[in-house]
Image (cartoon, rainbow, N blue to C red; front, top):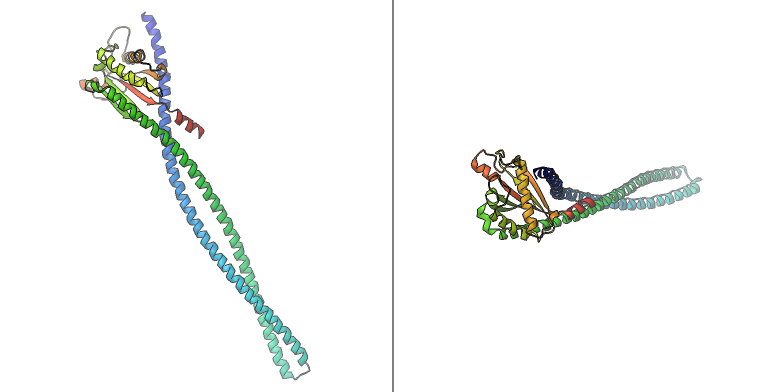
Length: 346
């Protein structure tokens, strides 16, 4: 019989390790989802700042574009006016040439006067042509600036549109993550309240119920469950576990981890259990069996694990500290399938 027991112990420990890894994976998934939600919120703040910056740039660019259009309109008007003046000067020049031809046979004084007027007209025409060329160059430059500005505006508008799409996508993902986490937290709170109500009569007998990190922790001191060095559950402890089992059997979407903890005093019991590791595993397994035998909890939801003396609540080397450390913790965690799906999709 002893030989069979020693063969079963490694198998129990191996099963506990596998289930424990699955339990830790779900805890990590929740932590990852919360971290990612916080990261997405931070990225959204940066994206909103960039959008505000782009909107400011667009507003400035639109003002510049408006100014360039006004300048272009003024230049076009000036160019039209100079073109008309140029045309009038050409007409004047042609008339002067015609008069000069008529007066070639006239007196020298009139010829000189018309020559001066003709030269002045030529100078005015040249001046007008120079101004027209300068205006044409300025107008071409303004039109080039307008094209560049339109290109920059289109580029900024595209970037703004892309950022808005990113913001919408990230906002939707944050909403999905927060919605799932909120539903899980709400369900955990409701479960904690049910467990507390079911175990009201045991709160002054070494039993506590807490909610933290998205899980419910039911902690039972050794005095409620076991005699010193034993892994057989007392009648009072069994009563508490049966009431707990009635609540948990209505929760098919949770994982239930039963952890046995001992103090740091070396175990000195019989040959079936050699040390605190064995004792902590045996106690966890005893509780799992009671839960299965007295409720309709699916066994696949349950995990038995031994922590020995290595996760003390109080590290002091006192009688009170050792008593506090000798305990069993039942940790109830909602399954995070929805979070896994969201994280895998993205």
